[in-house]
Image (cartoon, rainbow, N blue to C red; front, side, top):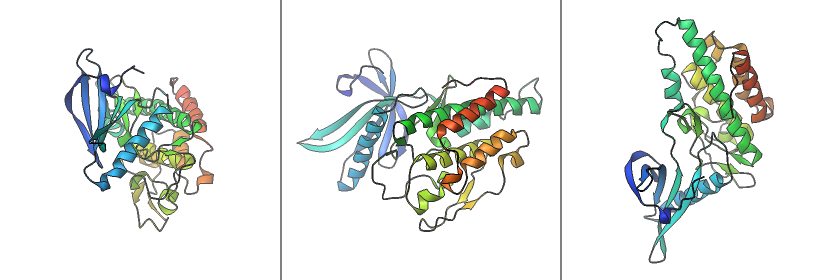
Length: 291
């Protein structure tokens, strides 16, 4: 981790990377070294903005507890004050230069000169299995440290320009022991109990992971729509990955569907178990994933 504090950092803003609820993320560059970082900022204009400040502080606390090559790093948090009042906050993070997971996966479908469609499909699936294994390793690391992501989806996974996977956006992550009193997550990837019981834990992360793998493999979400949060029944796709694409190995199909089991107790026991299954599958396909 770079020994850098925002108070000492002289930087220029390169561009805006994105906006979320109450926050904006910018790409910045250190003047002296050229090092690039992501800077997530929140402004406190009224009491309603307090929730976003708390969320940013929480995200930094989560990132401080994690140290994994497939997880974005958090470096520093600065609370800005004016006349003794908090007016905003900035979170300095590692910059992951790349594209979202689903965009990367779709690009792998493109025809390749000199390769048959079957060869392209096999190579694509093999590459995805490696990335799935790396993502499962990141989840396993988080869960061992008592943290659940809570909103795992393709839009929170970056594939960098050097083809590394980075899990991002820990603003809604849950630290074991914390209270959970509101629905959090993205409907297309949310576990039934996240909506019905307002739960976030390793089992819901596994469902989110299964829904992410499904979307990447099939191109469509598994959760077609979400009814009222008070009703835990969800409208789910009846098409398995292998039915959508016969090139998908049966072992991968079965693992995805196991993660998507409606009842938490019917899902795999842990992210580590899922990681081992994916590593074993990758090895049968001729590669050994890192992470």
